[in-house]
Amino acid sequence: MVQSGLAVFDMDGTLLDSLPDIADCVREILASHSLPPVTDAVVRGMIGNGVQALVTQLIRVTDPEGHTGMTPEETVTQFLSLYTPRATRLSRLFPGTEGALETLRAQGWTLAVCTNKPEAAARHILDAFKLTPLFASIGGGDSFPVRKPDPAHLLGTIAQAGGHPASTVMIGDMMPDLLAAKGARTQSLFAAWGYGDPTFAEQASASAASMADVPGKVAALLA
Ligand SMILES: O=C(O)COP(=O)(O)O
Ligand SMILES: [Mg+2]
Image (cartoon, rainbow, N blue to C red):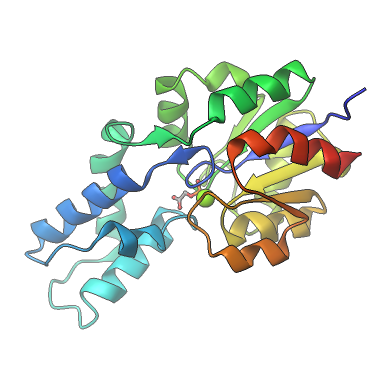
């Protein structure tokens, strides 16, 4: 009998390789302020803490002296209006994602998403990939008063899915995912295929090299 519980997935860098669309929107914002473009590699390290954090880092890196007058508030609005409608133009699920989710469901796991992305954008993306029906709850970065790394974001997502922290594994690629899991007292699985530094694995209960590894790894964590 396979041990099963609740598997909570982060989105960007875990389910979805969202970097190409996010980086394109970032470059469009920079061009609108006559600033030079940044590479995908620069943007990669800015993803995972929510859109406010991405914008704050972007302004710090590209316009540290404030010559353009771009403000975090206006830039968040600009980013969301550019990104939300085209979030799946270039972005793709990581290899093996659909198969891993189907295997988990067949083994009796309940699935959820806990992302710092705004809930509307997250739902738009899951709908586009026809994944929405697989998830018992979708906790976005604006669904609760706080977001990862605050454990209340993960705990709220778990409660909405009808789960319990003791039988939950949080799967994610960045420190906010692993810190939220620690705070919520769930198991955690580091998504080594994502955008995080490999050393983040030290902060997780276990590490997976690819989506295909996830069903076996989460089962082992709850055994
Ligand atoms: O940084 C974001 O906006 C989203 O990141 P997450 O899906 O990895 O939580
Ligand atoms: Mg992530």
